[in-house]
Length: 433
Image (cartoon, rainbow, N blue to C red; front, side):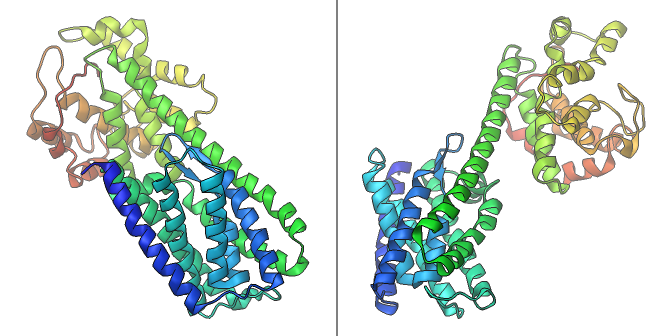
């Protein structure tokens, strides 16, 4: 079954469930349709349309994101379950079917249906936990707990359904897809959901749609700015990988080396508790750790079919600093990345280079890259030998733990079975210490 066909089937199921939920909510919590209700409805729907139109297109991941959850969650507090669903359906129909005509119909149906499920289940959770919806009064203490739960339900359903259809379309693991789609923004969006409460409270206080628009639109713009910056970071990461891949593709003996080292380093870093910026810095340093070898002075060494001379070994020892000199020209690269690159050939016993650092004075990222770099060097062919067997690679790691390598990093490599997985990957080439 193709991904497109599977996605359409999921859309059909989601649409049916959304219709059933709509009917259930309207029967259980019928709207009042008073003049105050209609004014609030039109105000919140207008904000929803604007938030949807100010969406972000994440080209690196192939999806869009917006802050339409602010008026939708705010509607739960002001208009109750049925009112919140009317705001959701109304804003999605206007923005999706009239203002985004180029999008396929099944995608519009899915977007509307999954939001109906998210808002509907979130509003039901809010009411069932004692939350009260009102256009005239709003008590922070009384609605806080139900509102927090409703927010969690909303994002769980929203991100879960979107991740499920994307994973089905791309035949990718669900959890990996969820992390890709939500990583970097989910915490920010959960924090920004407090704007929904601020929106409802402000509406109750001023009872004037013009003032509500004036207060909320700049905050939606703030999130748009944050998301744009996040997308730029992703694009920079993609460009970085493309650059390294292009450079290494020029030489069959280094092709793919840095990408493999970066992938190993990330897995080990995560297992050692690195998160967020620390993990990104480690991965970027691993990608760039051998950039100094693009210097023409190394072209002959990298292709040499035999042992290196003392002079060549001395030249090889200079590549970490040459790499730092190249990377330093990019002003956005953190100093921590430069430190990881410079010290990725330092040894635990102090016999490494360029500074002879020892033990924990070597940055952790550099210690991780050292192990990953050595594993890939042993496991790939060189001009003068075939790849070493997995058993030899494992024995070398164990034998040199505590002298060349950080024992803790070696333990993680063995615990994660990284060496054993080398047997299943395609053979590639690498040369140089």
